[in-house]
Amino acid sequence: MSINASWYLSLSVVLFAIGALGVLVRRNVLIMFMCVELMLNASNLAFVTFARTLHDIGGQVLVFFVLVVAAAEVVVGLGIVVAIFRRRANTTADDLHLMKG
Amino acid sequence: MTTLLGVLVTSAHPTVPDVGVFAVAAAIILAGAIGVVVARNPVHSALMLVMTLFGVAVIFVLQQASFLAAVQVIVYAGAIVVLFLFVIMFLGVDRKEEVAAERLRGQGPLAVALVVLGATGLLLLGQISKWTTGQPHVAGPDSGAPNVNLIGTSLYTTYLFPFEATSALLIIAVVGAVVLARRPPASPLEADAVAEVATTDSPAPTAIADAAQDVADGSPEGENEGENEDAGVDA
Image (cartoon, rainbow over all chains, first blue to last red; front, top):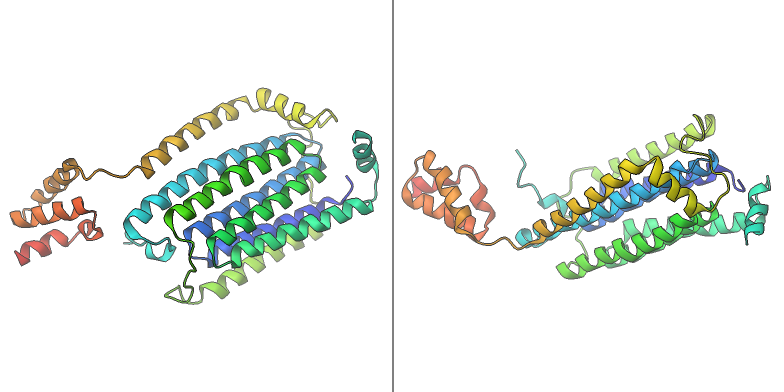
């Protein structure tokens, strides 16, 4: 272990915070998706760091699964965005209140 | 190369190249992440996302996760971001977004405060506690064998069932994307179903026809619950 693990984990925390901020403040659905990807990458970073620190390959295998789930999530999410865009002609999250009670 | 990596691993103190690579990669990651959030044009956001993903891949290489670094570049930068760009250009939404219009009151400052609070809490927690606790070697020790061998062995022994479930997940995602992105046919079936529901409320026949027409046209007002009765009064 050449660099202390806390540096990697701090980077992961900051990256996750930026992603969460983006999801909260941006209103374009596509950019919100990208910010979710940032948060997933932050978690991947933490997984790899712990795999390295604990000498356990399971962390890296879990990153593999996160990658697959992220790919599936993006495919379905963008499908939903395309389906919404057919009806509403914009991708702003605030305008999607059709199911609001 | 392997001897170089061995030297880096066994050295207790971080070497200058290590620190340099980490600093540059971290700067790239954070600059890209901030760019994703602040860019007004979605295409710029996607390109900034590529930058961040490459930085994360560099960090993976720095931590001897070479397989994941390759997968990161191929899957994320090569497939997911291309999918994002494809959808952005397909929808033609690569224009600036108006930010001032009708957002929730105080959402921005509240979001910033919450995120800063959470991140600060996590960082402080890392300072006052031990980062790594728990049982090491749950899925087999990282014995120094090549990274791909270790991951493959673990994937096909310990994590065999999740791996198989992953294939099912991917198939479901593909089918779901096809179903979602399919252009819905303006089918008489759908209109009939709505008319059937509407007859239970017993409005005027013209209202039924109107509601069915609304649904067939795909206008959102057709899904309003009070629409049928209003139309019946009008008729």
